[in-house]
Length: 379
Image (cartoon, rainbow, N blue to C red; front, side, top):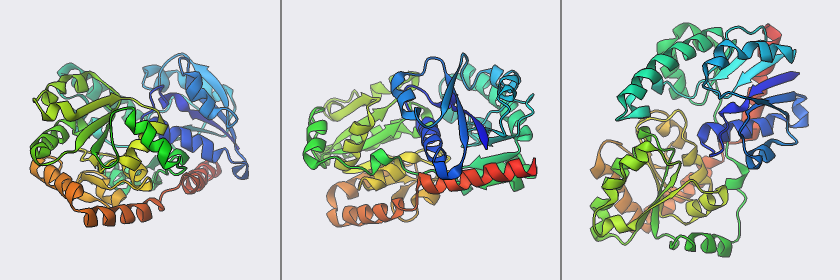
């Protein structure tokens, strides 16, 4: 079976969607699946990221991004020229003028019912984004043969907007990148975090993509609230954005503010070292379609504080501390518990390691390829 994959959702600064796409491509390229893969990539994709895909698929450069209108209105003619059996988008857009059967991935519905979590404080961007995504995603969902969603929570959300497409959906959980399960020596981990002036179990970790739904302001507020009775630091990693720049003032509090470290985007090797060394991951998102950092942290033996919203309770099960993401006191109390109650922390580490074993890209690949075969058979 020949499959064309729209890999333009893979950016140079890897985010959750990009990481999922890379791992899907790697996993389904296993010889046992007997697939021939052509991956469309953005022209400016770095050699570092391209090397993650080399040997797994043929790569074809496309001069416009995955969210460009051309994706919906002009990409179809390019895809059809490959004479493939199937088109697959790890993102939520697909061409509407395309003869090739299509499968898309709907990660969440935030642009439909939680627009402010994507572009808070930027009203023009919110308005344009809402109109743009409502229009193009609507077209893509109606045209796709099958739709993959990463959680039952997302399936429920999707069914509210497109109840007639629920029977064409398949819930397939994400897996865990091997870099989060293949560990370096403790001495190497210590050396990596020492470069940032950090010590093992001496800091809380927060992972963000620079968007409002990651709830970074309340994480900072919760940290400042406990700073007087704790010697912990707060480390924030992930993509910088206009939004993260706008909240830096929150960390300008004399004393506690000096213990907040914005590291920006860092290599996976550093992220793994941070997970393995942090007192806990603080991930109280206002919404998530899946929440990869949760399972990554659990696999690294890092306890997790997360949220009641979206898929997060579903994905973490009983292996994390779950808080109301809008209640700063709940977040700070959970941080205090993780920082001072070693028995509770050890218990969540053990539960998290066990929970993380439920997520595998190999298992995801089996289910994704099953959807591919079913789609081609029905077409």
